[in-house]
Length: 158
Image (cartoon, rainbow, N blue to C red; front, side):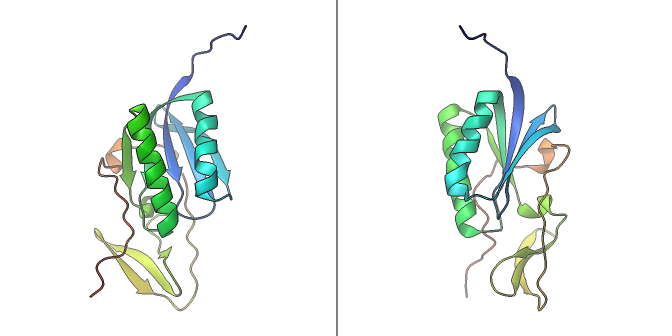
């Protein structure tokens, strides 16, 4: 007979904008555990989420809603929004710049997404730039929004 253990109440951040994909586990707003993988988001999101929910009681979901890989953002949003609805877990989002100290984010070719005030635009850089995403040590709910729709960083083309 298996002994019933109380699972820790946690919040989960999912960063799946580019490789590697990161999952941050927060207890009392402090990073206590994480998973980092180079696998594709479409293949690994359900598996890692399932593993984490066996270990923890997930109270809130957070993610970076873009800009970044169009497909990765879409897959992550659909997955997390589905979990949010099916399991009645609130979902929150913020832009990707929150996780890389507002550095330019690779778009396509020599174009990068940059954030000017609140507007996200594309800018050309001749030299390749690297942009590393990091999970914050502390989770501040005020940095996230309940508007979770993807922000692909691509406006209307004129």
